[in-house]
Image (cartoon, rainbow, N blue to C red; front, top):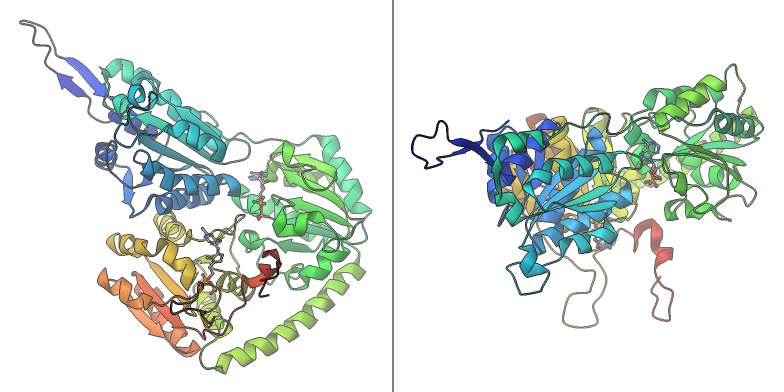
Length: 577
Ligand code: ADP
Ligand code: TPW
């Protein structure tokens, strides 16, 4: 607990001055009581003293240049630790900057809490034009899993308890907690304050599936000719690596990992159908989704990407996720760990055996695709100017020798090609643009990953993607974090050779020497023009364990518009694709 404020009562002969505390102390005490170790934020009125006190009390405070980066950091911390990451913002504009990240975290099912100071309620609610006036609670509600406001210092403990439990129980998400300046400054009796705080008991309880639901799924899977498991980032978050592996290996069912589930089983696992993905999806007759939604990233489960006769089993903690896109023949509502353990147990001995013919068909297609890809990779090795695939192969080789390193990845081509080129062998070591395909997560995710794990991070960034959070390279240097940012710089959004029809640069054009940026902040900047240079400097930077940025000069003509998802662009008469 932090020191309470004491106040002289001024009464002659009074025995002891009353011990007092205030809203700021109570916020810090409540967070500490609930195990919060780090706050990510940007300071200003009315939360600067809150950040100072948190730091002085032993909570690590990581200060950012922009709230959306602090928010993305909190979200990544939530994903990596199963404890809500905490983001601290100032009123109105700071709050709104952070809200993007809160919404993104909610979309990705990552637990975080955005705590924001806000202006005076009696002024805000009558719209009298207060400093940074905004009804933040109303603004946050549609974008968060839940939003709460504390009106009295004595409710701070309750508000924090409610926010934390809501963020991590059930389907994780982003929670907004509004604390007006007046409440932060409110002085109350220290004993009453201390008594108003509590520590959460079992904030994210396990949720066991019904045995009959488990048997229904087993029956369906055991009768399948072409079963397939799809692992999603909910499975990665659940930390149920062992039962997942056991179920997959004992049943022999091929699996496809979604991007952030890569590494749950090593990408070179013999049952991975990642390199025969299209065939696996198109032909599977029973599909088991494990912590993965049947959203746009999986073509909504529709033909022709999937067989129109495919039957779905879905493992998810959110009951209302079932049937959101396709009928779910065997819903398994529960946490991934409990469900997978029940599946392993109840499918013994050998009730499910994936047919060998199906496994062989996928293996044959994988071999064909790998051979095809080998040609592209080979050509990229020597191409000059450097291609995405040239730089990425170099990064892949260095990462193989640095298995502890985490990968953060965003961009369009930089995302699609890195995902396919760089195999992951360890769970939860890849964080990327996620469900929204959002740009701007890069430095926030990288910073939180380095802070929370202490391990090195390689952030593989498109040059446009990097720009969204690029100023945080200063925070990387200020905290001396072991983050190597690799910018795949093809001088543009998607590509850098679009002609312009006016004297201005094309809408997609960009131009920057990112390696010079980091030098301004005391970090190591490199420019690399060949795959060999990329490998050499990446090895050097990782070995040094200090902030570094490698600007890889990529052929501006390399890359396709929107990467793999060009088909989502509108196809009007002006369409270029
Ligand atoms: P991906 O993008 O990798 O396909 P999604 O984000 O679409 O994954 O899906 C994640 C799913 O995982 C969400 O529907 C969420 O409710 C679910 N989920 C998150 N945590 C758990 C958990 N511990 N147990 C079960 N399901 C979970
Ligand atoms: C918050 C739209 C999708 S991908 C992308 C943008 C701007 C950048 C692609 O260029 P980059 O990568 O990063 O140089 P590469 O490898 O193809 O050259 N604003 C937000 N999110 C998204 N997704 C966009 C805009 C977009």
